[in-house]
Image (cartoon, protein in one colour):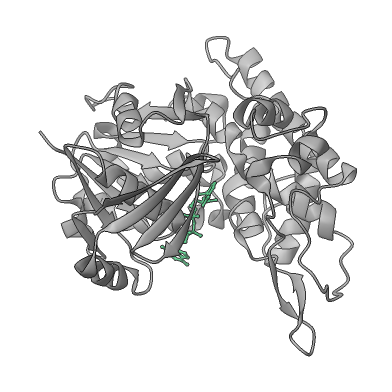
Length: 402
Ligand code: NAI
């Protein structure tokens, strides 16, 4: 029969996912977007023509492919009717809105997929599903499979590059008949690349989320910022200095250490997929990086990062200069749905995380929030994060019996 999938979201990733999956035989693709008038404008675009996806396979091999989802709507009931798999392809701060919209229509044996999940997706999904969670499964990918961007809303999306491999974990409800083979079907939908690696437990995938990269770089670059207006936007990755790279490396050490301590305490749990960020770069961007000698060089010479800039907004009286945007997703998404979740898991494992604590403390000030107090997650805005503690998980036993 036909596999029916739903893509939630209306941004770069959702466009890419919808267009790519619509190319596959025997797959029906629908899109649910709740943001502003995205559903109307995407539908209108489809009345005129199919979508175009421009796929970059290599430097001198690109291909334009035409395809279309069968429906784009903001109506969660129509969107979910008869659906087998639901992909969440939106920034993490929008997950809850979609989960709440679809949860009452979800059928038994539906697979919910965070693409990417970002840290804490499983906790939030299980809570939103309530008693249905046992009949369903929740999968989470460590990142988006592609670098992609919308060229024209509802019409044209560019797939700039594929990751070579990508980790995914699946949490299967005890009364569901889904299995880890569901990930094979997802591989078919995506095509050859990236190659999926099944990560054996969801706690590991939470510690693998790539939300660890942006906050230390933001903190390193802007911690002494006094409000000056810049005439140019600084390079985000190519401009990384030793101090920023050192901060990221320490954050990664703390996360890897958390995984090791969990593994020591639970001999039957495999946390080996949680590797240091430098090793991850060497593996995932093997061909894009020209100097692998250290983390700073690896980031500066990663072709996938060419020309990417710091998030800035207009500043200065004449509106000509730039000031840093601390509400961009590098902090707004990657702290409450990233570092804070990892800190929460570290607290449960009994691991100290001084560098992560310092960065959360700085970032929450920029966001006007309070997550951490000293080195404990007791701030008044903790409910706006996805730390396990927010969902009542306080011990390793809790974590491994979701
Ligand atoms: P995006 O920035 O294109 O997402 C924008 C979309 O999110 C909007 O079109 C809307 O549908 C929704 N949205 C935005 N603000 C909202 C709000 N206040 N309420 C409800 N919905 C709202 O995001 P993109 O690029 O699709 O990324 C999705 C995820 O993938 C993110 O977690 C991102 O960090 C990650 N990612 C993206 C990559 C890329 O190349 N685009 C690469 C690696 C990871």
